View 1 (cartoon, rainbow over the protein chains, first blue to last red):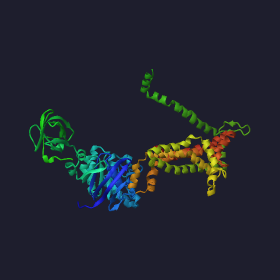
View 2 (view 1 turned 90 degrees about the vertical axis):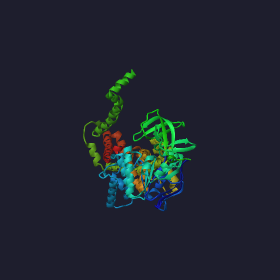
View 3 (view 1 turned 135 degrees about the vertical axis):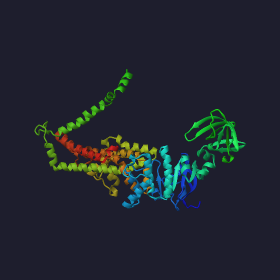
View 4 (view 1 turned 180 degrees about the vertical axis):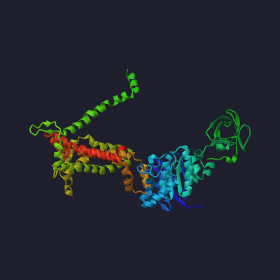
Length: 324
Length: 286
């Protein structure tokens, strides 16, 4: 990558009592990228975000933001803004006052304040809502206000702490696309925290997978999905079949396994019996008891198969991946 | 038998409501509103200056006396000033205290602090006021004894002593509602304000204060109304100074209707205060 680095994290460590929430994390974030910190709850991703924002102080390590070490500065002296998990809109202010808050703090004069706030409101497609109170908005609308309130300050980095967690599935998928488009439009670096692997794969330029306060793997969504470097990553991101075949311990994703009664599609195969077929909407998960004694999952049938029938599972060897 | 009673109660919601509310409603109507109504009626009676008996005939003589005698106007203004002073002092002391309890203290010490704030309420009112009398006694009191050499002297008995005493007495009633209000205030609003560039004092003015205003009003209703009606503290710490309650107390045995008339003043002030508070919308969120 030739892009300049905007956030540089070195040796970042933070403990809460006995628990090491973040343990010696190094991470460079490039200007203008959409990076996701992905991990289960308690993996340290949110603590890293809160330390970048300044809500938590690191025990050890440094955070350099735009060339300046900010790790000991209070939140109000950092050129970042945050979109909070439950929005944290000020309930006693209407939408436009919420959005103008950051500008008013900085002493921007009234007319350009209003102009920028209206522009931000337009950016998140909420024109006409400026005089509503947060309580009069739906979850999705509050989300947009929170986004506008942060973006209007034109920070060099926008931090998003599971901002879509409280929305229903349909709205979440729509917001994922909108957020990604918005990020391209404004060109600001987005640091996005989520525990939802699908969300991470959809939106990110790069993903940092967190586990036990450390980064397990850092890479593009494709690298993370197709070439996970650890057992944890392979199981946390997507589904995987673990098998031992011809003396090799390998993993293979369900969508790469073809199920057929007789035909082989690929250079590896195994025999089995269809135990169950679980319909989950876009795909159907086929559970197959194999002759190896394990159960494998496939989402890629090639013909109609009934439960109890014998089948052949087959795949390309190059789709397998090894995990230490 | 009990079972069938419960079933029939379940089918008749009105009966259920009656069983629930009869006792409290009776109490409210007879003891509470009844007493207030009696007070109001009595205020319009007079006494026979010869026999000292109450003459149960409606007239406005008491109100005429009250509004024309400048001495009563002074007492009203003084009492109002003391009640406002007590409320302001309690607010200034209670907000940082409640903030520490709600937002900074660890959960364990938080419980301890709440208990500590409540502890003075277990002691008798009179004991506490006499304790303050001992503290504030000129020359021989604890304050003069401890700080006299530093040039700090007790204000003596009078208005300031009353304000100190009442502020001490009613402080817990101000701390607790503000503490409850701050507990309900989500921490991430404070984070968000800082994140948007606001220093702590700005956050206090623009976010915390407006959001705990209903709690502040709730607390002030205690400190303000309890101060308006007080006469014991005035008697013990006030020296020669009189508050409205003292006037009521003095007239109680010699001119009961006039005492009732004077009592209407704090009642009226409280009604006006509640009306103003209601207009700010603070009661709606309580």
